[in-house]
Image 1: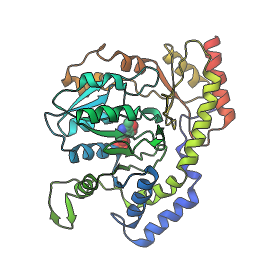
Image 2 (image 1 turned 90 degrees about the horizontal axis):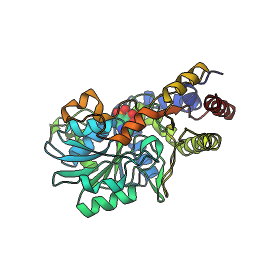
Image 3 (image 1 turned 60 degrees about the horizontal axis):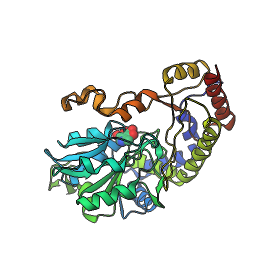
Length: 368
Ligand SMILES: Cc1ncc(COP(=O)(O)O)c(C=O)c1O
């Protein structure tokens, strides 16, 4: 068998007729930036998340950066971030001049541990940024309670968990403002770069819509120094098609993850993902953990199975963050995850027999 880690061609070919129709309607409209397709998608995505507003942006990193900007975060401020996340969460904080203050995850869920947040709060802390990592909602109810107690804002990084839930409420709807990415590999993926924010705040939504467009609400009148970060009409039209299928996509991913769980749960030396009480995962990534990660990756590769590592170097040990002066051992749980984690194939269209083959190959590796 030859099973790639991800098959984006197959995923999108499922919707090729609808995507072509969407492209034709944008082409026919002759309007490519800030038009009806974006307005439509923003309405649909806000409604999906049960938030009052959505604003489409050029990508997920911009969604995080602009969210911090409209929350007024600047040099000298601190933002609580997970030590275990994709580096984009940290980069956004750095780009507005603030300091990322890392908090370790729970080993079981790999998501930020709410019990460790309060000890990191100082008089400079302005925002808590939980990341719903690998598709699993963080313990957002507990995080919101801590934020409220300390008068802090919450910015959810929901790039990986569109459709996941914490205590009946969607990830991406808890924070004062929430950022997401529609990078092609995401559960809700565009055919290029795209991102968005969701919020219930009229003020934050209005501010973001101005900043994303050069700081201008009325053409050529600029009330603030903005940027160019707009979700274009074509991607918005594609995303409307994909959004209609998001719940089916997530259900399929959850079913495939269930097959992995059943097949892999009793292997000594292998840890499978666990989900916090009251939370769900839409399994953007299915990661297993083992001390023999590199050998397992090589073995699976020889058997025709593609894998990835999310993420091989935690943010605090990246060269980009050498200025913060962290060293190995400072965030041992994040480090251990990076040393042991391996992401195995999981996407809509992956066949059950392929999942069972991968399970068999992992078993045979541990039996050898
Ligand atoms: C957790 C997380 N945050 C932010 C981003 C940034 O999104 P984008 O690639 O659209 O800029 C990503 C993208 O991979 C991500 O995984």
